[in-house]
Amino acid sequence: MTRAAPTTLRPTTPAEVRDAVLDVPGRLAISGAGTARHWAGRPDAVDATLDLSALSGVITHNPGDMTVSVHAGTPLADLQAELAGHGQRLALDAARAGRGATVGGLVATADAGPSALIYGGMRDLVIGTTSVLADGTMVRSGGHVIKNVAGYDMAKLLHGSYGTFGPLVEVVLRLHPVAKATACVAVDGPVDDAAERVLALMASPLEPIAVEWLSGDPGRLLVRLEGGTSTLPARVRRLVELLGDGAREVGPDAWDEHAALTTGEPGRAAGVGGAAGAAGRDAVVRIGCAPRSLAPLLGRLPATAVTAGLATGVATVTVHDASVTDVHDAVAAAGGTSVLRDRPADLDAPAWGAAPSALPLLTAIKNQLDPEARFAPGRFAPWM
Image (tube, rainbow, N blue to C red):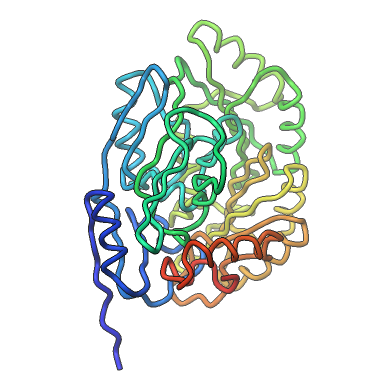
């Protein structure tokens, strides 16, 4: 028997989200712009999909406090455009922001970009959330004042939860000023050479905002600096001198190539050995490990494309679909974590690497907040 397609609900207010949770007795998928629909575990069958893309817009912006509260379905690009008029920004440059990724989706998937080196990811930028539990309870955590709270820190629990604890409806964020000036310096070379350069760079007083290696033949290290219009040129000259032969200032479009490699965009991913990945049969895996272990680990992976934060220990690798399990195993052996971020539609491979040591605690929290396992079934399979 063919199962009927699940109903799609598109609430426009937090109250409507709560009502939808109460009105649907079965299991619920949670979606936003859909830019991460293939990430993590494949969703199991559900009775309804809660589409939060219409729950959008700024609720309150306090420029003096440098905070903003937004509905979870707000596209990051729209938020940045509105904040720019006040000389402010959310200091997050996740690759899929250009595809329409929403604030709530970026929190739920623990996504971040190169500037996480200095500004952190969403876990560090979120200071308050409002979410809906399985029994319809509206839970607020934190707020516009940056401080610790007692009990569950829902903002931290929701980060990387893929909706398994319930839908996120409002987010309060800390902001940063828009940089007066920005520059990027590049130097070509393989990942091992780049890692040596990064060691010297991070020991210097140059304070890079982002440090990323892109695969290719032989590969390229990108370093982003921010600063004042009068002081930045001198820092750029010192950076070029520190990075050595071949180092030069490049335009901001270098980061477009980085975003394309990170998202596994077809036709843009130059292979580690110079060859392009196999179209249609590639999988994208996000990995994390100790920064000093990342370059050696990448050398052991069968990757066709890589972006690597050599100072953060976070990388994205594109591999042929048959290699996904090998990637998970190699990352686990290095003491790291890994999760699928894109895949062929018919790929039967584990979405997650080794289970975290905190899994029993997370399972207990899931059982308490969502005892009937209604939300986002399958996202953390086979863990829970």
